[in-house]
Image (tube, rainbow over all chains, first blue to last red):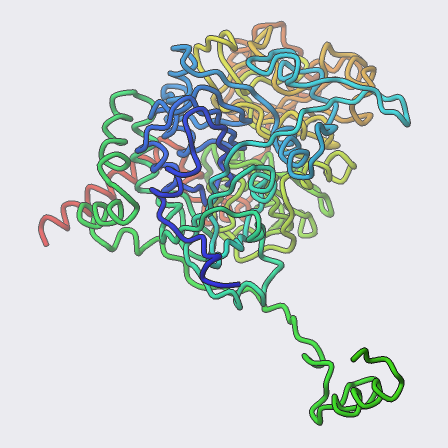
Length: 348
Length: 274
């Protein structure tokens, strides 16, 4: 692979290029390692009328909804700040009628992505949910939220959901190479399915590493280069959510957000300061350090606990041995070609 | 005199006893993960702790922030994905799951989605997450209701308990026989479900709580077990474990917040003085 294949760009470029008004956008991460700097960029570019897919919304969904980017939300779980007395941007938008939400269970949502990722048009899910309001109450998907069929083999009633193939996925990982091979570990959630079911994939990572690093640990590659459209190196790119091996949850910033999100004005002020007035993640970190000192963030840095390396070595790396003889036929290249000529196997 | 405990410690210790050795356990965040850590340390060393994020077979070193918190562990034995965590339950490999509740009815059906009208919510709650599927297929489900309420009719049925009671859950043919909620823990007592009618009854009452206190918050004529017991005083070992492992949880949200705020103020004063 060559420099020509490099997909490295900035968050600003990637979002400008691949996320459009009216796009369906899937948030690839589940609870941890949320692609926060990409989410903030979508908010800053004021993308409109998005259909957002989220396995489990935390600060990411709240920011996008509060920024007015989202018309439709497909999810299983949304964040609420401050318990019963608090609230959320999602709640305010539902009450105002500016947001429609389609509720699934964690499994059903993930199953829609799995169907999409493999090219199926639908997938069976666990039928117990037929007895719930998840099944009975539907919003923008209507009849197509679920359909019930009979198993062609047993006749049993089967609940199904349609495949999802969102326009674009934004996802944060620990490391990637410049071609887009993206390695992620920890709580796997539905990260692979979210990325692979999408038409386009934008990857942000804590660090860009050499291609050799990827080749020595392919079991960690969740998203292969050939599917990826953009790679952006963004240290602290998921903060205030955590990335295993890099940093913990920034409890301090998360509390500031959690205290704000229950109230529209407070949320706007928090967003102005930390989303709109910081043009990128570097500016966010600068502002953070300026305001709270560098010790606060440093306190969240992970100490290393390395995975035992998996050995990808083999007995030899060439079919020709140290003396230049082919390992099974026992001949050198010169002897081999002579042999082929003698046997009349070479065409002049 | 045995060692004094907080209500929160009592709740965690009570619920931990629902975990038996060699079982596979799906934990929810908060009280259940601490209960899981306690059970594994004291009663059920061979239990396998699992979370729907795909973190399977782990030993928490500190209280978990949420169900994808690998930062509270030092590695774990099996990394799978969310999809497989649920099909595991579907196949029958999950013995117990723990779920939090916002609204519950007398047959253990649950609402964690919305208060008021689904389409114009008075209050939007988190939603199903894994709840509806786990309560469908786990052999037993342990429910915790801490800030929620008992109601005649749920505003929204997120997760199936015993449906209309009796054999209505089994009759649908959609659930493993014998599955469903096995216990509900509240700040006042422990409730279980009648084996025939599937109606919830009060089985156990926490110290210093009167039956009237409980009846007051239950809108139907709550049945009381003829063998009603009082929740046992926890052992010193149990109290010490919870207090050391999850001190903030042992204190409860209100007292914990008080300490956090005074700690912050102290730090600010030091900074200003320095």
